[in-house]
Length: 472
Ligand code: TYD
Ligand code: MG
Image (cartoon, rainbow, N blue to C red; front, side):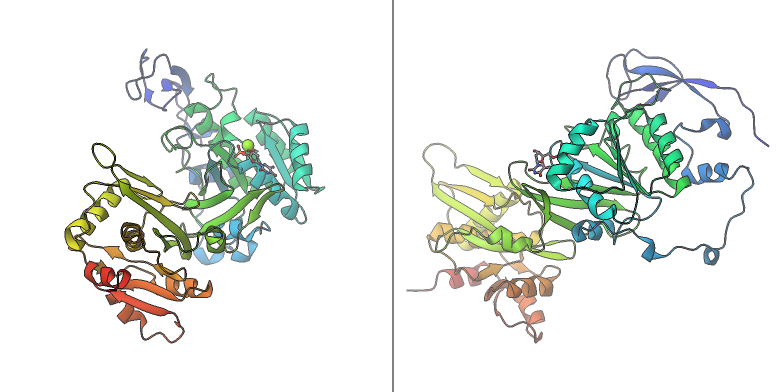
């Protein structure tokens, strides 16, 4: 028995999604002018198909054609982890939590030009060997995609391309052709004729996503959505999409460098700690099995002011080089600059080095850089940065086969961090022979029999200075 109710007129801001029963010239939430548009909202659940609001469970229930749906016992529901589709890229599979789950909606976000379309088209070759794929593009023509596919050597016969932007046509196409995997590039170009606001507005993006979720769940097809990140770093407005979809992967990296990192920020079917590392080359993206090796490849030998840090990206240790340069201030206040490391944290380390270690930075400029466009935001980066700064200050290189990790306290003490063992083992695998680490960490690791490299424990800044500046 369907509950009948009157349609309600509401006004929705096309920019931020603010809803009101009254029209305003200026949106009370985001202050943009003339963005509120009239919408008719049916309050009966049957009629609300395509409109946002109803939870997906409710949708699923309706699709079964009645208001009274029997819940199932957990044991009666079959779900096998083996049902995941493998993409042929183990880096992507890992970030997805072991492969693509059927019926899931996966959002791939990132800056324009970072390689989202390339990644999606590339996995079609491997996936196309076992599954039929529909690639919907609202950005490029079929010919353009073909040219890119030629370049990426994607020739799969199971891949169908279509260049449309009407979401109703897309869902109809999915329902009629029943592909096993769908890719929508990009969600910002899709529009529903039920709404007058332009493509890419909050209303359109939200409604189109809602319709695709409905299709994905009812037809049990995984759908990849590509989403461009706007200026503020959010995918189409204030995180509207992120809570709707099952997994959100961000594709990041410096456009001018070839290094790309795929990071899960949300995953209903796996951990969000994993990252995938790729390199953009002439023939598309290549997986990087050993990112540390690549990051350390061009390390200068015998130069003061550099040290290797080991950071954890999820459960994976990655080694990266940090560089420091200090020189006398020419005029006015000393300059500080930091790339890839928090500026305030750099100032804090400089203050600790000055107060607790007696190194005077008051008339010295200090520049800090993390090689490879990486961002070190772990406290474990403090110690290698301090080592690089001290090495630059005393103008003495540290040995090439040395790396460091540990946190600095304001009293000049060094503190243990997480995953000490994995960090040391990774560096050992890459041929490092010495490790500067907090004393407490050394005591913990001393018992480990598989650690063969030399552990140089330091309890405080005094210990570190004695180590780096032995008496002549
Ligand atoms: P693209 O996948 O179109 O980016 P997005 O979909 O995220 O906007 O990637 C475009 C960039 O990738 C472009 O600058 C060129 C570069 N690229 C390569 O370097 N090699 C390749 O083989 C391909 C296909 C692209
Ligand atoms: Mg693209």
